[in-house]
Length: 479
Image (cartoon, rainbow, N blue to C red):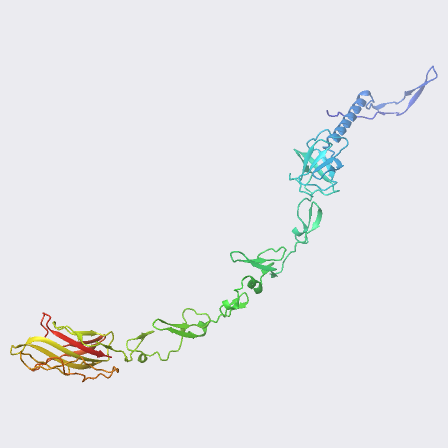
């Protein structure tokens, strides 16, 4: 109930504090006011206004008592007892309940533990939390320091944020100051402004990337201040292959000059260091140590690699030989049966182009002569052909045979050439063993010539018998 105050007014008269003495019969006197003219009547002093004052005083007293008991307008103050996780405090007057807004300032007797609580006069344990509603970590409430809390909801919340926080001097840039639960401090974090701050170490990540270890401190990042300088020696400590031997000369890598010889820049026809040959396979030229750009040639002197030093037809690295072959030979190894029943050339394949061919032949066939006389005919001969010229038959003998006619022997089996392939005995013909019947001589006109793979003989004999009764043999040797 609101207090109704009385508006008091002063009494104003013409003669204040003036009285007439009236003697009574019993010897007493009565003072009769002689105020004269009353200017203002004033507020009389009576029971009603005085009682109103009394009621107001009583109301104030009750309000003050209530304020002391609920500790809302007047927070309590007490030192704690109990443990760091379960503080106790005692207030006087004793609170009757935890009113919303109940205030108390405590002075911890021990540092708090995690999730500390406060029990005031046995009203129950209430969690102590900072102004943000977070439970205090252990050690945040210091011994002997005052902390004020208000009952809000189910918690005692800090009355103000104050200087709480977990920052330490090493976390704050020098020379700036800050406060935390422990007081006011100055930062000690170095402020690095050097343009080339040396790295204190380097390493390598699992994927091979470079790891750089800067010294502890703050740098703003980017160009201009706080760049981290990594030395060549530090780079080489994590990557041993970073050395001059893997960098081309004329190039600089992290201050290191390359040492790989640039042989392409020095000589477009660089001489090889070694040469070896796998006969019948390939030639190897070992290049000198250094860099080649893929256009430079690696060379080795081969002054004897000319056409006239190579056998004719041989191709060595694009050089085709023109020299005549020497010492290569082939032979029939005795008499060789030839085709004698068809008019076809004798093509002899020896696998190379001969320089000289020596040959002997024998032909036996049946034929009617100009007199229509049927007989058995034999032709013998020998000859030579050489490269670039045609050969010709140097001797031929033909005879027609009749029953009872004269006979004689003729043999080429004992052809006795020696071991020298160039010394073929052209007269090595032994007349013995084969029948020779005198008769007219045939005109042979054979043509012989050398081919790329041997030689050919166009004999000129009329082999027209198809019954297989004709015979011919050839004995040859070539170099």
